[in-house]
Length: 67
Image (cartoon, rainbow, N blue to C red; front, side, top):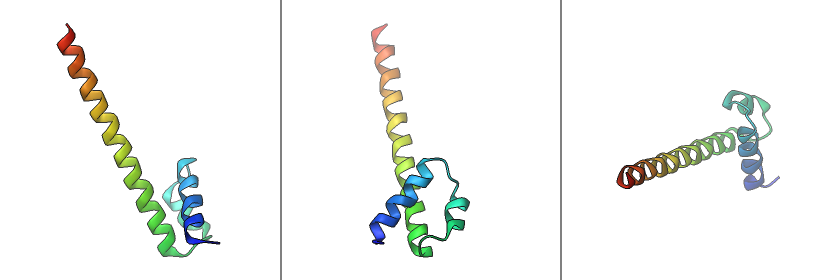
């Protein structure tokens, strides 16, 4: 299977709630691909959280301006 397909499948497992330990223990991909998929998943998660925090802060600021 192609490396990108494996990484995509590993990230889907993480999105579905599998823990990093579970994904590592599946042994369906080489260690470096598993590590890379987990790192990319965590980076995406941090980016989503940062985006949500920014939007929350902007909404809070806008609410204070309105009244």
